[in-house]
Length: 398
Image (cartoon, rainbow, N blue to C red; front, side, top):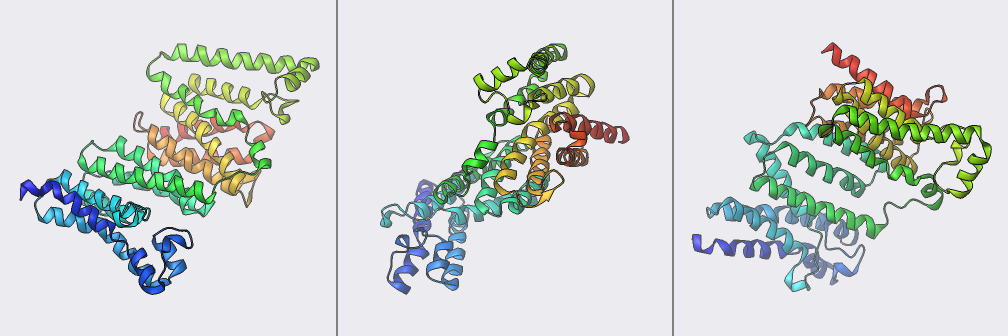
């Protein structure tokens, strides 16, 4: 039988290529379901075009195809790698059925069923890091509440889950296979977002998202460099950059002609709200310098990630989905700040340990401080110092 193991992926492909959506469309209405509704041979389109019970049957069948293929390979005592390849061949068969000119469904249901089975089996066997499910679930539920669109949740959570999985587990065939399934689901999610135009900022909101905000992730270098460069050098670099911004701000605030010149000639360098005050970049860089100077590396670096990814998420999701006023911001934006800060801090804790409960309270204090706008001071300054102080106090209690 071992000589025929290479035929099992072909069997998986053939099982996966059976399309109940297409077959039921032909039987019940004499149509090619790929020409109707969303033009996809999947469960949602079946429900829309054919009704509930055909959709239920389609869902159950599509969910079982990959698992059935893997069970057959397992019963035939195939090697683990062949079992996984056979399961993924069923996913490919669902997407590219030969008799439908290689245009089938998205393969999501088949892939999700395999994914749930493998994760459950791995948790039972004790090697899957089930603790990563908690922050991933917090992120997923937060984005679901904010956006209320499954594809947006997938676009955010799937790459994060892949990163968590690869960082917390040893690379083995199961890990690789789970990663492949997650990556495929991510690609499908991005395709659906583009096809359905699910995330498009209108012009007025797009203009509010300053280019400096989109460059903010580059500041993550201040977190990476301390692992390779002495602290004194890092402080010198950050302090020098901050000093340049401080001098520039002082100059333009005291010399009106310089201020006018920068706003007129260096278009986009400064925001309109910064005409009569220090720029948010100055506050941010000053806060980073103080954080690195005063606080332990694990807390300072973690809070810098709050300022980078939490702030960016709050702006993007707040602009796109902000509905409820929360202090000076929107609740949706503040929730995005918390969720992304927590995830960024949790991933960083793999390298420099921080208790999870400290991360939660640190991210919470950061998101609340960002929404408070304390004394009118730029939140790029207050968030970092307050959340770092909170985390330092909590650490001293442990």
